[in-house]
Amino acid sequence: MNNDEKNRLASIVLAPYIQKAYALISISRKTGGNQFRHAMATMSILIDYHYIDSVLLKAAILHDLLEDFHEAREENIREIQDEDVEEVIRLVKEVTRHFPESKREFYERLLHQGSKKAKILKCADVISNLTDLHIDNISLNKIKTNLNLYEKFILPMALQVNHNMHLEIEDLIQSRRLYVKSYHKDWFSTLLKRNA
Image 1: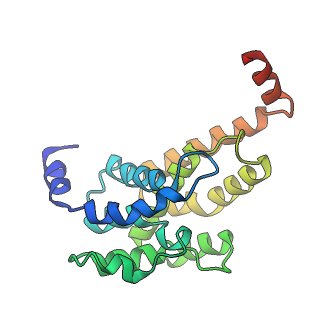
Image 2: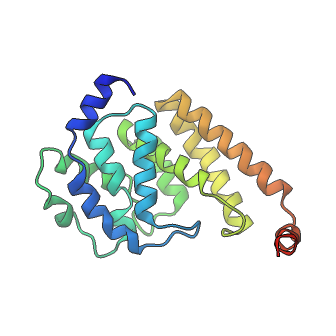
């Protein structure tokens, strides 16, 4: 991070958004941890890729709030009352799956109709999800399904917005496919017995 990026980041007031996202602590992730940590990781990935954009970072913090915390409403976010809040709400809604929309339909909608910021945010979200994908807490079928969806929709999306994100997602998909391929039914039991 260069000094200009540091100064821009220092000028972004994130605390009110972090406070709203704190509600996500009560939402556990199957991979361990909670949705609040995932939201913060997603924001950190954007910073890692030098996206020092106030709307994008604020939306990253809240990107799962409306979808995962069912008590949350747009009005709750609007209470923040800063200059970015309406644009943040629009972006959060854009990256929120609209039930009964399937994941496939959601990703396809984002790929073909999503704004550039929505695509960037979704790529950071997927990078965080891929780094958390482990066979000890998610079924092999679900992992395979997610990897197929990421390959079909998220990789082309990443290619549209950031070549380096595309490379990272591609590498993560390949490494997770190898991970799944090398897994066999008794592997985990054997490992547990060895460590007992």
